[in-house]
Length: 325
Length: 264
Image (cartoon, each protein chain N blue to C red):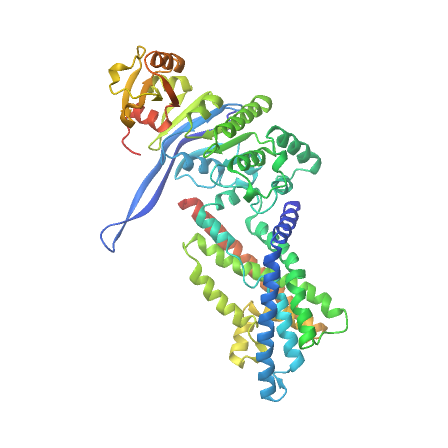
């Protein structure tokens, strides 16, 4: 039986917009329009789309914080809105922008409260907490008040809080937003291990392509309130022709793109900083970054470089030619 | 139930981390106690020794008990819930498997328990030293006073919670808040004892829950009411408690439905 079943789900909002100096007009915004999808237990699904595409609205409907305008949602066998409290014991939710921890208490003080809320006995939540604290390296800041934690530390605490009651399904809304590379990677490794070991279902929204690449076998792309793509990530990149961009700073300026040797398939995108900075895009399936760098280095000395992954907005826009954003 | 106990304990600890604030608060309560006591005492002297059945020491006791209970009873309230509705953090509260009112209530009781020592004791000590206090010598008033304080903390919590819940309908609750504070300060007997009011205002005050929020525990603790009267007053508090619980639950039901239906 699927853990999430969404059938013809829609949600619209009434917003007031000004029409003239005093008059206001009621306008209907369709945030989600008739989406269908199911998620099987143990799957890891990335739910992606541009800002305002309807991701958060869908998540709120899945967790029972928002009533659908029409359609049907079943999560862990529950109807989310009327059975919100029962559902809360089955799922874990992480809002990247909000905190479920007690802001002015030491981090470790949040877990006994959460354990009690989930009606877990001490013999039940304590070992689980120790396991989570160990895996997420919470040890050194367990006695620090939450308000004094760095964002990376706090997010690890948040994820541990969402997983304390061994939920069947974990919903993460932008879990890696604002984190540095190392914190992101730690979080991904942990979530991946959690899913492999305990069969926890993951549904996450993100703007970071690497989150999806590392964690999800399946991607749902939502664009303008409809599901635009449902399938493996590789398929998405293929359809969209995702490109990576390498930006190199040269030791000595080179004023023309023609003077730089590039491998076949790499495209020179532009020159900045009076010939010092060049950007080159290439298809990661055909060329490796090392090949591109070796080619450039053969004609000019490279002082510095950075690599840019295709971002999701860009992919979605390329794929569907959407002009919103 | 265990969740609410944990929440109350955590709230006690949260408030105990702000010790400087507690000291500053106790200092302020004591200074205002001196001002209020001197005003009332000069009024009583001018009136010839007593007003509305209050002698000078009794009036001073009324002031100092009021100042001591001000913080524990939560007479200034807090707008945490309204803030969370505004910021959207209410979504986190609604994703928890607990009753929203009960979880905030438990946290307020934890706060009150913490406030008793650092905020309640200093004004009483200063009052005893400066003006003297007229306190009863039998244990009865203290026992019933304790029950009455518990009821009053809960009533104050529910009153402010209802104002907070207005945030589900209006973006800015400040106006309602100010209005509530003015009415509550007057009718709860915080400014002057309600028995000093003209007859019509006294009748009106007694038809509201406000005297139960401060006047009642102060009167019971000071031993102004005898056993039977005190029991009746606590009974009135419990009736208002039931009424406010119903009002708050109805507001919460419609308010969260509005949030859940309209989004935001």
